[in-house]
Image (tube, rainbow, N blue to C red; front, side, top):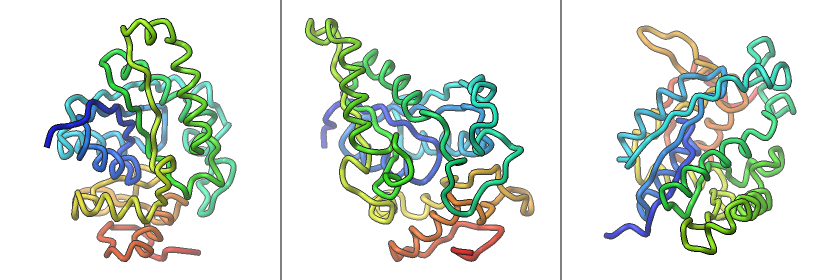
Length: 239
């Protein structure tokens, strides 16, 4: 089946972005982009490389913007290792305009290669807590970025971009997981959701099972009625 064009997919190596890239890969040639922004969970970058092969991405760029860690300082717990990672959502989990930074860079690449779609993994469950996961943010940023290249777009030199996500398609996390599992099968358990680099177990590392992201991962599999084969250091889905 012929593809409908190109899509630049922001993929962290986590479950949400991988599942959405897998779904888009059914319809588009995907170009994956991953950001090393000084996050504590560097293991997710390694997993993104694995999934670029699994999803047969046309290209995969890992972009090092690690300097952001010094700019973020103590503003959030995802880049500041001195802060405790909460089990439930707290404002400390919000990295200042992270998605705006990622999407802007991804859109520059999209416009350079003629891709019309820029995708990221925000789903309906993210909307109450993360403003940069809301559809109105995605639509507003797309409008601003297209305005920034309005002359090139009107002349036909560039393509205007659309920013898309599971949230803009009205998908919650369990629905996204089901969609991803239908495509990936057990490979979905190779994604990395933990906000840390995990807990040493044997020759490798497993999810901590305690942070908010690990807990959300567990609950999403339960809700989606999929047996969770992820290994966690702590198995209970809630406190």
